[in-house]
Length: 101
Image (tube, rainbow, N blue to C red; front, top):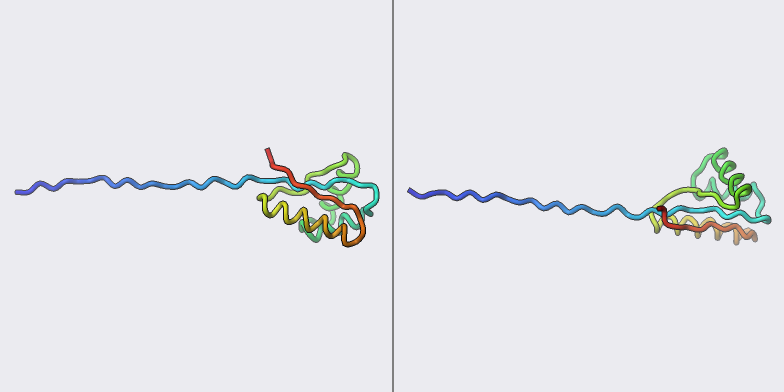
């Protein structure tokens, strides 16, 4: 009579770390028209008219306003495209990114 041996199978699960998030920030300036800022926010960040206006007014009153939070690559791309839209129209519109804490 032979004796059967039993082995336990060990499953390893790899956990992927969530990507770090970055904030896109609108920096206020005194030269870019409010309507243009609202237009860029609606086009690049897909905000509603009301959200875009609120973001623009907050940046106007406080100097800066967080627009949205994305992964690093997306945040940098959107900030660059929005800033470039301002430059193309001749305005000093500026969007920056910073890591979310």
